[in-house]
Length: 307
Image (cartoon, rainbow, N blue to C red; front, side, top):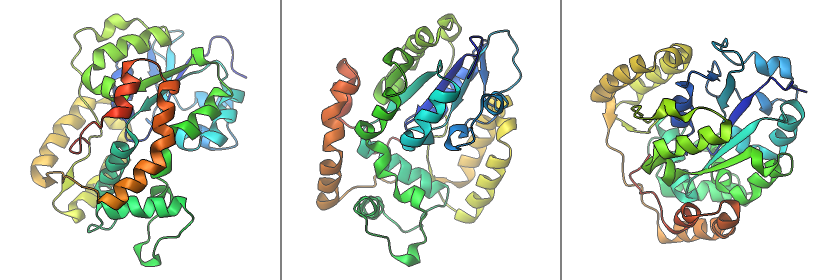
């Protein structure tokens, strides 16, 4: 079990809901000790120990610095991760960003396309249908060669089924729920509230320019993108130390190989299936988080062109 001097802030999800941007913002704080890799995925392993987890973070520049990481798969694998996390770092503070489930699924589809995990000609409607079929126990056509993780994308929006696992092991005072529209519209205000939650000095973010990260975009040439993805992944440590360098190189790369995102519409049948699938989630949202932001998330989408 961790000692009283250990301080941890863990962004646990959801996937494609702004976790990379939030990690990047918080990593600039002088009292934050960010993980060496943004996604440690440490608690996805049953062999998690405090010594091993401490090794996932950069060297502290200040005594008592807050260790911070962001692994969206934690929420996806809540049943396994929550008890492991509670056993190793019971005093950790957890952050969950919740996004409209259909918009989150669309963003995941775009991200998987940009990472070349899906066939180039697969539409969002087709992908959503396969994900729903997967939840119904129907396997995809064998010729598509899609990994189970990607087919499980729809289930990662079922916050009503996933969050209770963490609430069973962590007191509500150690759990912060952030609504994706709030993070998009008022990042500074969201950071101020999170600093209070994490006992950080929020003055650091006053007037600080904030740039979103990991925003999906279309690609013109998949061969070039394949090389770019490999290079990007291999140099993550460099990008974390020099985020400005990555932003400049990415801007240049987009001028060469980026393509506009499509609208990615859904047919009436698929949209109806998704609305039925997520109905319990939307009903539960006001209970998951109080205030107008929770109601806004359940009543409006954040836009089909948003990544």
